[in-house]
Image (tube, rainbow, N blue to C red; front, side, top):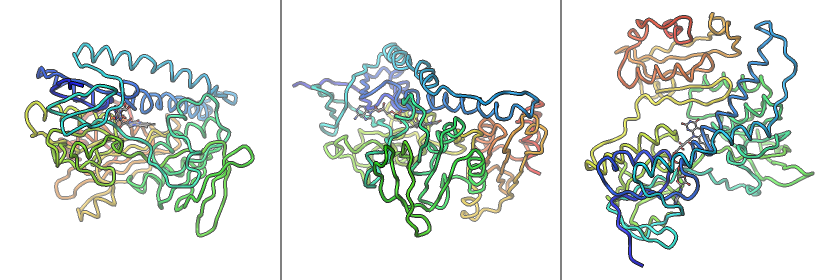
Length: 451
Ligand SMILES: Cc1cc2nc3c(=O)[nH]c(=O)nc-3n(C[C@H](O)[C@H](O)[C@H](O)COP(=O)(O)OP(=O)(O)OC[C@H]3O[C@@H](n4cnc5c(N)ncnc54)[C@H](O)[C@@H]3O)c2cc1C
């Protein structure tokens, strides 16, 4: 079998892989992209986009719950879950075909199949062998495997986005982003939701006070939360699933119609045959340098969720893909800048965050001013009948720079972008206060968040 020659072979057609194609095609390089499932990858097909359609329904239910504050009488809402899933599917169904057209227009050869390495510069896909000067691992992530007896009974976000029946009860194993986001939609739609977390805090990487606010709001809408839980096993019982766990040294059991693996996601690199490519890895992580290049094989780059060093975010995957593309074209000289990365947990309302948590700032020994506001009594929060409205802004006392900003409610998922801009470009707290914001908006409250 003779090998086909390309300048660049990209494994994975998600945000990261597509991000690579811009710079390399502008430079006239020949490019093949191998995709095992749907072009577009997780975000548009099984992640951010379809999830947000369910979250939007959760928002509508929240608005209905609060309607009486606006003097509107409404009856008890009933969500047609099957129809909601159909709406979600119909909104995303054309995305892979649209991206296929975009890739064809860009003259990227898209190959359907699962790739493995055949050598340091060679890839196997189906019965083809491709050789390339540069190979990019953009294979994304997959749910973290959990070594629990009965783990095979668990479903993942893929099934939650596809199952047309609304489960009467759900237990999430792990209190991460996916559990909270789907948990809020289910709970508002009437499902009985339990979240079990092994660590002392849900969303362990996020600001503890923000998480406490979100946990209180989650409990207000009926979600049961237990932390410091050890899950022992999952078994079938009485037509349901029974989960046996320990909490405070005592064994408990809980039953539910569905149990979800909500324990986060890990880089999907373990079936690539990395050893054949001399790509160094440890614990499922590919070792990369500051330019996202393999430390042992200079022909190989990694970007997106497949990278072990950065958060799993779709816009970040695209950005890292672009950095890799530019490094391929110009030589390895660009490095990603992770300063001021805004992120949100799309619960209803959302928890939004950028920069350092208060604990991280104090651990770094920084002299900080921490401005905490419960904004429920503020005009904007009252106007929109918010149920939680909270912010924490962390400012470097020495130079007035913003170090971190954390919100629950108050349209924090929009405000956080302004604070991301401030952190990235060194805009100070005084400068943020000096802006004339459109009024009345939630952004106009930024001025008052430094009191
Ligand atoms: C339920 C859910 C909700 C999310 N919500 C958000 C959100 O609201 N905001 C946000 O920023 N991020 C969100 N994310 C994360 C976001 O989807 C990812 O960060 C992003 O999709 C990563 O892009 P990627 O290109 O690195 O990987 P992916 O999009 O996963 O693309 C990797 C592609 O590689 C393919 N592949 C893997 N192995 C092979 C192989 N051997 N051969 C060929 N192809 C292969 C896969 O089929 C896949 O299509 C969410 C994720 C999930 C699961």
